[in-house]
Amino acid sequence: MLSISSLRINTKHHLKLREKMVDKLLAIAYLEDDLEQAKMVTAWFDEFGYAYEHFTRAQSLLNRLKDKSFDIAVLDWELPEMSGLEAIKHIRSKYHQNLPILFCSMRDTETDVVQALELGADDYMRKPLLRIELKARLHALLRRTQSTQTSNIIEHGPYSFDQVNRSACINGQLVEMTDKDFEVANCLFDNIGRILSRSFLLETVWGISSDLHTRTVDVHVSRVRKALGITPESGFRVKTIYQHGYRLEKVE
Image: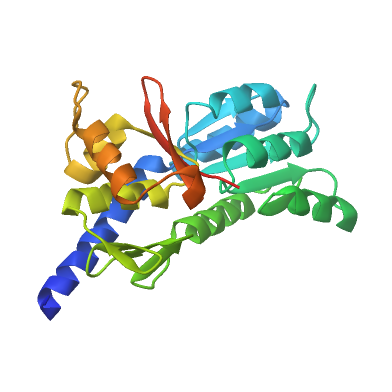
């Protein structure tokens, strides 16, 4: 039986792990074809201390999402070739179901706002953008997505993870896992839809900063996949991203 002090240590350890993940994953995908507007907004991002990548075409963003994870996407509506609304559809259906999206447009009718939100945008800002408001909305989105549940039990479909006792269950049945396997599983389920590189997992779970080739991550991901029975039938799958890492995906 765990003592009160050990429970506190385990809880504190998991919170620190999550904080480290937040710092490492903070990145914004910015889609805007107006270069003057983009110059102004990216200067704000620099001021806010955010990492970002700027795209002028929706397809360029979609291509990047195949091998790069972002914390937030800030999308313009009016774009050449593919509109921001179409980009949202692709992001939600093919790439990141949970990626927070801030939609920006000159349009401000109720119909326009509702349409964007129903297609998958998480928030809507009318242009011209205001620096302080943009920062506040980005912070709100980050808090919403990064403030993981305060409950000790975090559930994803048939899986539940007890953050205090550091144990995992499938449909209520306890699964035997090592401490590191538990952390790897937590990392994957905390970032559903995101590509996690091997170097990121090494640094997050093991505290190792290394570009050296290692099978450590591959072995533990394989163990987690087997222990939790992660198959399409369970509602999830672990996809190997060639020469990069892994992505845990929901299977509808």
